[in-house]
Length: 160
Image (cartoon, rainbow, N blue to C red; front, top):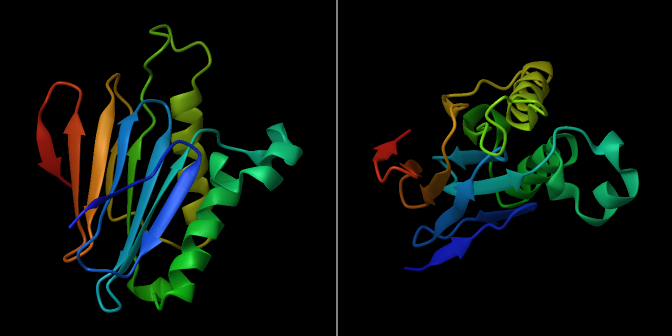
């Protein structure tokens, strides 16, 4: 049983029950975690920015960098492995205000808003959310049962 690391602007999907998908040190970025308990298919996206219109060329090269291009890619890849939208459990983690305490750029909040808007428009319910605040998070998705664990920079681990 090994960890499959999801880097920044990256996504991974799996149908192997022995896998654990993990992304480290989420700050203003967002991790979208999806899991179909019947097909035992899951995936994780670690996106940086809310909207690909900021850089169309970069979005073509690295679609997982943006919410609006990465989320559809994550879902379509899970569908190709046997997942069905109606059974997908969705969790959203991250969107912290880390770098600037005055929240001038508000990247974390913009990312949270973007992901909520995308799911609302596509009639997808977010089952669990751990967003905002001002600390980093590490996220693990255990494929055998779809459990999602979040470890904060303070060392506390919780299940979402």
